[in-house]
Length: 179
View 1: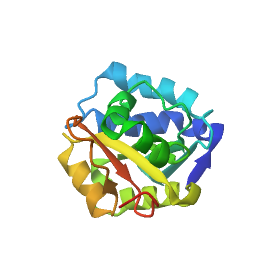
View 2 (view 1 turned 60 degrees about the vertical axis):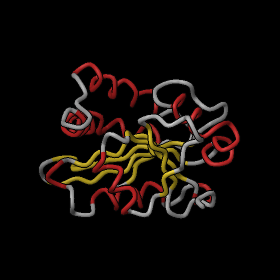
View 3 (view 1 turned 90 degrees about the horizontal axis):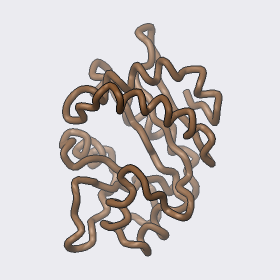
């Protein structure tokens, strides 16, 4: 199911529970404060242009979810964005990411992994991405996550020489900037 804008706040507690379950575990190991910060971010993120959330539910609750919005100019400078900007350079940021759908979070509980839940969430949330342009970033240290994106047909954007960090940037399978 997909939800647009502030309507997703009706599920905020369930999304926070799923977020905590996924991101408190390795390789993320987020602490309680960082997890609480997700709830605060969600309150702000729902007001971003193009915000949407996709989620799957079962009798247990939210099994997985994804959040996304349109990346605006100027390119943000918080969180992992400076690493992305340094690795890609201003021209590739402009051409590949600005105006594209940015997948901010993808969280699938351990019991739902390997069932196609992550693929379904990515497909649903990117279905109407502008000109099929969607992107995401993740940590290279999350080797299983990086492997999953590769397996799902997402393309890792190579860093400019000498700018490699622990951040990996991926373009959606149908992104026109994909080589």
